[in-house]
Length: 364
Ligand SMILES: Nc1nc2c(ncn2[C@@H]2O[C@H](COP(=O)(O)OP(=O)(O)OP(=O)(O)O)[C@@H](O)[C@H]2O)c(=O)[nH]1
Ligand SMILES: [Mg+2]
Image 1 (cartoon, protein in one colour):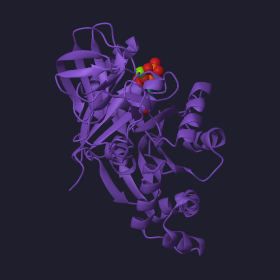
Image 2 (cartoon, protein in one colour):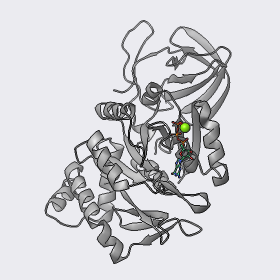
Image 3 (cartoon, rainbow, N blue to C red):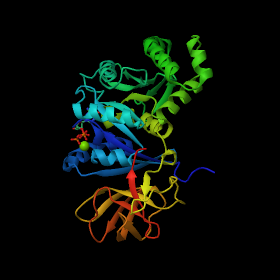
Image 4 (cartoon, rainbow, N blue to C red):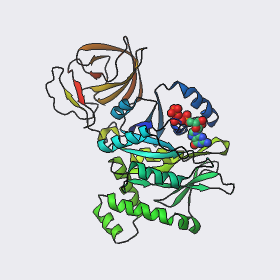
């Protein structure tokens, strides 16, 4: 039987100021293009938001403007949003480093590739210098321009197919020999990187011998490495005329196929309120409740990440305070907005009053 949380994804968006996080969030949510600019303007408040989109039967929660520490607790994976023409700030580079140490799954979206100053090759080179010298930072797509030099789509370097947004509906077409020639070098880089990181011995041996891998084997190796946090993929995104966002569906597919689902997560280390150690708990709705307040506001509206179990009307906060939940709105099965009588506090543990627990350590 599949795990009840396997069709959920809890994802955080991070990146430098103005890199296009809110714009990308709305593109992924499928917001009407005419409203995109208005919503991005309204976002000046910097309030935490969670948007949910269902893609291929998977509920994807995307968190924007959340405190960095809260994101590192709550998200199963992060998307680093980097604008092609603006570079990377020190805070984002530090966050990347921390994710590397804690092996947090993540991928990079290079945005604003429609900008005339944009240069995806250059941005990829900068990221590889800043983020990692190794084979684990792997670029997956390359922009394709139309006759007017406008962003038209992306070539998938693994499959060599072209994702084309110039047609009324997105179309995926085989690339012609001219394109195959253009991407040859980038594709060879991708294949040699996969040869270094893949745990599939049959595939790596074949690649070392210079054999062409099957596309399926290449894709599964990339997806598996990304889900495990062993490799980070880089893809592009941008805008074209008539407010069509280019690259959006590719990113949604990547979230479903190449980022981990909540059932793969290790539940935080917990103890009893008196500090007595407790056995590890499974990330499962049938297990005892272990949840955490990720964002609390003064109006007693709080965002809660459930690591195991299920919320009930009455929960224990930090092992010593019974709280009544007046109202709740589930974003996914394990990311829920709740309204309580009194405001809560960030990083409070919520557990069952019958089995009070305190989170000791989140990313184990
Ligand atoms: N042309 C173009 N403009 C974009 C793209 N993505 C974002 N923008 C614009 O860039 C500006 C900043 O985008 P936001 O989405 O607000 O960036 P952000 O990362 O959420 O910014 P903060 O929340 O302030 O950190 C907005 O005016 C967007 O319309 C893109 O792909 N192409
Ligand atoms: Mg924003």
